[in-house]
Length: 352
Image 1: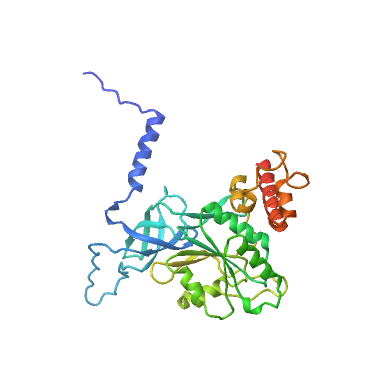
Image 2: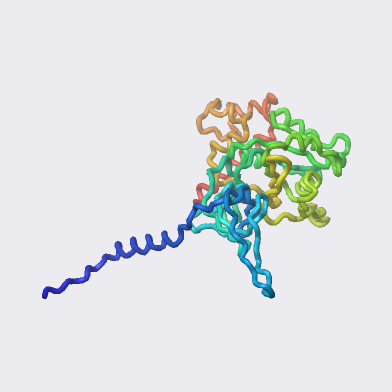
């Protein structure tokens, strides 16, 4: 009788079979998927708010007489669930719309898919990697105040980030009632208004009706230096938000970081507010030079009109930008901010 040899699999075939088996193990049944919104991020876990409910709700286990009541969390629209994510999903952030599944027996869920994003706000982290901050934002509110001392270059950085993400910006001067007459910050407000940026003023413990009207229907990300009152504004408009606030450090005159994770807060019908951790520096080294130009439209319009193609805009006599400063067409401060960013990005690219 002839012997039948057992076929040997190559290493490549073995890896393929193992991968297929692993994929089958990782792919859950998606027939019970629900719609959800990521409202807060906790490292590897996220909080997801249920935007839909199952057509057929799971049945709560029956308990025999005398036995303890088991844990059970009903799946209700608006309820918030701590969730893990599937291993093959990209990094999720606050504001992401997702598909997920709930387990009423544990009160936990798993995110199975992510919907396409309408926008994504990013920034570099301390390790020089691009970190997503919030998704599906329709408006970015840049909050600043006279104390802690305003940094116009930081506002310019936020504006560049808004332009890169193609998200409109609203500049809000907070604590306007604390300003002295002829405060230099009012000149800064006028400068941005002249450049075409939308600016509003709010007062300490003042009426925020106009600001609330402006934010209606928007998914808004609040950014700005620590201590300028981002969380206080949110608390005033949404009392149930209970965002932590803190006082200004007397030693450093800088705000104390109070928001530790980006959180989404429901605001009226179809609107949401996102409070991000305080940012004192907002690196943009990961952007292309063309993207930086979009954040300085008055400068972008003059680029290419200098006498020399490789003009540095720092000392050349026939520089269109320097001539525009002399004629008052653009601000020296804005040109300095633009050149500082260009140098920062060029230096970072050379190192990499």
